[in-house]
Amino acid sequence: MSTALNWTGKDAAFALGRRLISGDADASGHLGDGPHFIRDGDTYVPGVDENLLVVGDNLPGLTGLLATHRRRVKVVYIDPPYNTGNALAYKDHGHDHASWLNFMTPRLMLARELMRDDGVIFIHLDDGESAWAQLLGHEIFGEDNSLGTLIHQRAKGGGNSPSFVRGHDYVHVWGRVGGQAGAFLTEKKAPAKLEIIDGRRMLVETDVLRAGFGRYARGQERRLMYEDILEVKGAKKLAEVDAKLGTGEYVLRQWGAQGKHAVVRVTPAEKASSKLYSIIKALGGQNDLEDLGLGGIFSYPKPVDLVKTLVASQTFFDPEAIVLDFFAGSGTTAQAVMAANQRDEGSRKFILVQTPEPLLSKNARSLVDADSEDGFPEISRLTAERIRRASKRHDPELHFTEIAVTEQ
Ligand SMILES: C[S@@+](CC[C@H](N)C(=O)[O-])C[C@H]1O[C@@H](n2cnc3c(N)ncnc32)[C@H](O)[C@@H]1O
Image 1 (cartoon, rainbow, N blue to C red):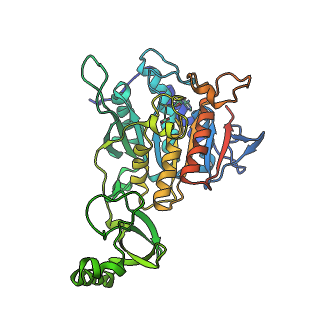
Image 2: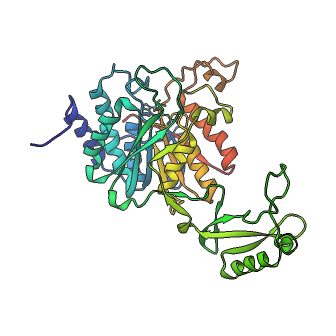
């Protein structure tokens, strides 16, 4: 006897996915009569080295991307709407799991098609759809390619749930070819920076030697400069440091205006990582938006730190990877990619897809001119604005291309 997840419409949903995947791309870079992209009124063929915001339904959006990005995406992160959502393309069907599964099936099939063999997909869910999504994921990606489920602790407590206080969600993970994804890594020492030195990725710690113990006033130099070691710590300490300078574990770096040198520890990046723990605590996605002056506009954005951790875990040694989020919402994933790049001087790219559905929140009108006749702005407008504001903070040189997708 075989076990299988069945629901009304399953065959049609898979048939749709197969049909969309098999459409032949023509040489001009779009699918014959299929969906294609428009920018400033003209057909646009996106490049693989571009950051993209695709405005439109992700079904044609993902189908259109097949022409240029098939098998090129390393990380997919999605936080899909649940049955309680109010998405334009996915309405609240009153806790009807079948319509959610029908909605997700062709989209996940397309996502799989865009993934590299060593690519992974993170699907973030709450209790409502988690069990269904896991079985659907097994069916589409293969149970053998399942890499497990992470727990995202998003709250500390509070709420007055009738059963227990829910403070976590689930992130199910699959690889396109599970065995090829490699370990999920995280840096051991968060405050250090990754730099490329002589062509090697190195973790750089600039404050290994401290002038003394205890608290330091803001702005006060707490590093002990190489030139002061003898006087402050004595000859034994100096000999110890010299030995490490000899082995290359430490290097000297010019520091401050007095021409002195800080003692800097450099560790090859591969030695400076540890495996990601399956429970990830990251609170407060709304705070990330508030920091950008965009608070109270979008409900339940995910924390940048969470998505950054997930993205970085699979791109630790692949800082040019392409990251896709086709339920972009407020654009957390774009900011997470920028933050990951900032940390290690990487050049990861993001592709976000978001429908232009109206943003019906009380602060949403702050996104449009006060005297404009426009009604509520679209969510995709928030996504674009967030990318612009986040880039000022993380990557002022960042370029992204906003394109629309045609429905057919
Ligand atoms: C739960 S939210 C994602 C929030 C996001 N992770 C963040 O941190 O802001 C889901 C998003 O998917 C969008 N969405 C729903 N159906 C879609 C579709 N068919 N194509 C593209 N976006 C869609 C919704 O408008 C909503 O913004």
